[in-house]
Image (cartoon, rainbow, N blue to C red; front, top):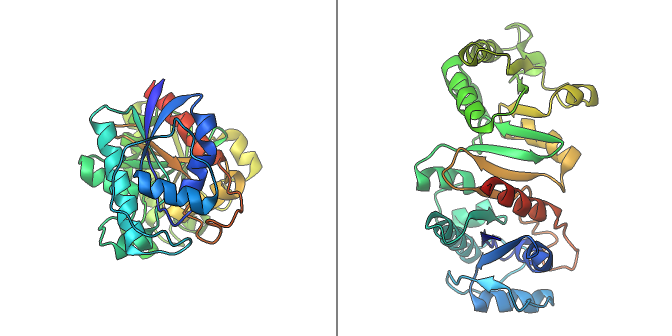
Length: 304
């Protein structure tokens, strides 16, 4: 069975509840190793009134703090980062076969002085590799051309050369087709009437298809029709120009099932496709464990 390193996420959120509730089931498919100390595990277990299975394997890390359910604090931010680094190192050293990350809180990371806005940016820097953020499930996958950056910065990054490089690297790693590439502007720019970025996307698509000597990429697709039922009968794989353009429809359609994975890295890394849900943390609201289980299964599959 594959050993999966699990970074526990922000302990003030729902990640630890999901891990405790899912442990017995996922242990049928893998050997999970949780990056958490015994003290923090016991405190969370007591607050949640959830038992800890006898085979719940931990790899201790982080500085102990008092859990404050539903609150972004620097202590929980630092602990979640330490857990992530510890789990990453377990994977890099081959002690574990893959990394699965539970959700962190970006504000808590900021309060803790962490310079990254999320796991993907941290992985790129720490591994010195380029990652593509891909989210989805068996029914639909969405790759993000840009990740966690302000929306106002996106247009300047949409040019022929940069988009072509992205398309080339993405297909070389993903090897799935056909792929729908979304336009940036309403109506995909209407031939330059509403912005000229979509003309750059079109040039990049033509260049990429010529490079691979076949029709892989299609677009730019008008964003407001890309995820309609008829269009999804034709396309299963999409590239969105920015974060919410791709993830808003994905989560509307497949919120509980979708996962997040980092394409193009030297390690296997998957993640849940949701946040810390501070509003329901430690309130016996029974958060869905489906995305976490799907992330575990995907990590096992990617290891093959």
